[in-house]
Length: 402
Image (tube, rainbow, N blue to C red; front, side, top):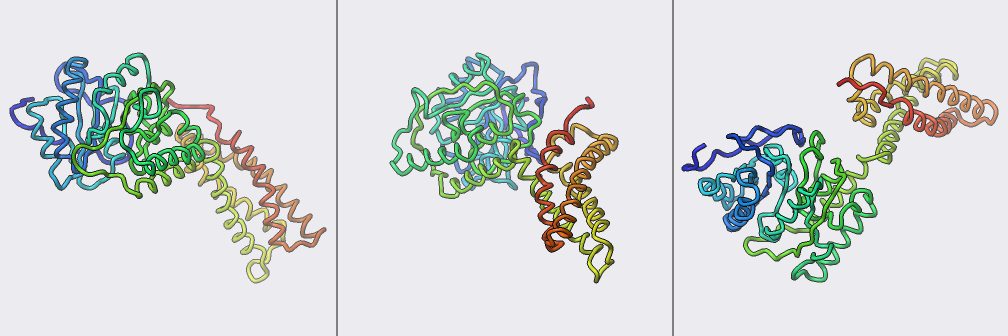
């Protein structure tokens, strides 16, 4: 590719925010080992400085084996144009201009989707992240690390001229994260860092769903990152441009924590299973009313309870299969596998249904409890049975097609 003219803009990836396992092929014979994303919005004054500093650092260490990707959110100050004008001088520089999407986190992921390196990184464009630290982070990766994070909270780290209020807000946000999402936030000393690198294999194939600026939390939560190295740095004050930190960023951070809490691990499955079960209550009660109420079909109590319960079981299976246990179901594709899951789910729930009907009859016929109240009590008791055995048995992965 000629470097006498600016490189063409990179096309913006579309669709889900998922990093491909195999990187796009690089031009020429050399392989790209490291891709560093620089997300920007109104950073036209800082871009020439940071690109010059980064290339000066990386050229001796990774000659022709790295790339810098500026992902600009259509800045009104023409940041993307300034970056593109630099490409003749810096052949490792590539530029992406986003028009329809906004946000730092998604900008980083879109850049990673277009990246050609086996190691993916991110750095702010405002020069608050010291560029010279990049080689220490790369050193952690070279030693075998899966991720290297620049941290303000380890030896050699800190902040320059932050006010007391800003320090309290930063530490308070981290403490809140430890309460809501300890298994993620507790893995690093500075989960709010926006300066890190990670091996592609750790996040490939994982669909990201970030909110706000804190992309590191999303990567730690969704990825598979066994070994993390941390390097201390002092967070600098902005030299040019305006700060992007607002109260909205703290609100987005809280929303992100809550979203992750309800999408990760057994607690999340229990929450989703509970919501599905709750929908089944309405299905069960509605069908029970249609079958048993004298103004409707007027069927006998036992038959009505049995049929309404079976309809609710099928409803619950379908929702659980695509939502609660969708990650497992996707590995057990095909009608045969789905039928096996339905059969196991049904056997467990039908056993619970027998218990359900027994409880309804005991409460109604012996203790004279209202039939609808008796039905609700029976559902509540049987829910524990259904959740535990289905969690352990119905969605076990025993056959996986390659």
